[in-house]
Image (cartoon, rainbow, N blue to C red):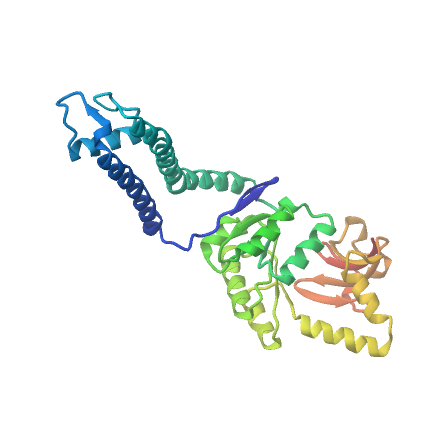
Length: 336
């Protein structure tokens, strides 16, 4: 299921297999034709055959099929008022219904799938620098809400979820949506994981989240992946699967609770840093050219907290933080 710029293509898998869906349409058509044949045979005295003046059962079948599928040839015609009323009030609606049923079947099994493939291919060409969210449960929805609140355009967010209800909620926000299983290579390839800016994994199950992370990492070796796990034991497997950032909400909640015991305002400040509604925020950026050689404490864009160099973190009082180098990443506290 893909959505772009307010135009949604919602696709929910039918509970019936394809053969059953086609079968019930065939049965419906045959039933309607059978009713028409039965009434025409019962009232065959109201029909006139200009060929031999005799209306046989074969003539009734022929007349019924011609009446339903075309406007008729005139060789057999209704002559009684009852036969004409039946053709006008019953056969004509049956003809319209049968035609619509055939058109609907053609659209569902041929035209719609071709149209959706074309729309997906067109949209995929424009997918680059986007954020993919795998899982739109409570956590995934909150992450998307926060991204939008921070200025991210909804059309730059792609939501993957196997549940139609979650997909419908993401669609209302204006996101591009895909109702599918994010653990499959084909799904992540469809949303162009290789050109994504970031991947957020919040499937609600640690094993599924780790599998999504593993699948995404082998398809996109460089994309940043943030994954949420509920069990502390799964933090290491998530990192081993390729996650850039692993978040354990239970551990984070414990940190907030412990911090609140040492001071009632510590937890408030941490929430202030994390939420878009706060007055300050944590920011990450590469070191600027004019900052090379200076200490981290000398930056003017905010309050420097850490320097990331060569995959390692260096705090404010470390030797590395005394002389910033090209390629360093700075984490700082800035005003919103």
